Length: 276
Image (cartoon, rainbow, N blue to C red; front, side, top):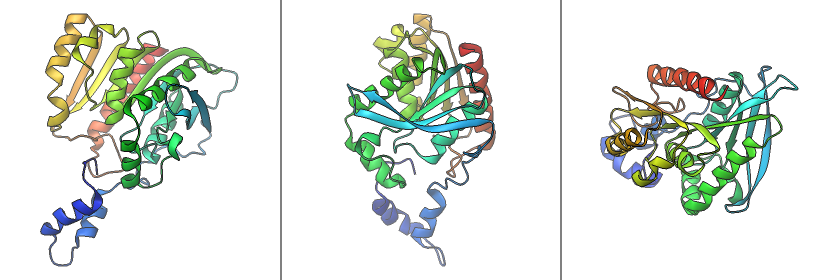
């Protein structure tokens, strides 16, 4: 569920649609994430190496922990990509995204914005509550510190990109604004647009993914696109027909296989052309 109501409130609303033999709870269970679906890359895949990685975030949560994934080639430096999660912390789906990037040759860091307050709890409802309790600017600082940690990592070439989903899509846009010397390539998936006045600060390239039926996010796109054009920012944008917000998240029923695969192929191609 990507909505903003609690499980109890949702249960009460959906109960009106329950029919004989189908309870509200069973309907909910068909809509909530199944993270087994999202594992495309086994954590023990021989092509990659992963580890828990902690870095300092003095203007944010102090210390932030995440998943660091890299190709298994020893003695090699890699272009780096920061992976920014949705509005519930570092879920298994986002960890898998980091592993997918490692398979394609990138040093990927997926921080957990909940780590300063205990970490992703293993439950999305609780994760949303925890993330909502954090100061928004401090969380943003945590991801900015993560981008710098990647840039300066001993295995990094120093070329850094960012990809984010939902909340993380908005963060990706914001990092492109706030860290123009660090973020060379940003890929926001259905993310909130930055302030229009800040768009001229962007120096990196953008690959922007939207879902056609995601009206709340899409309403900000025309003004954003106009500002990108006026500022001369290099960008490419795609609106995927007939799909909704979170179409890339293969742990939920909103997942659209065709749109997810096409958008990811474009993302990898974009990062390779921008960072390698």
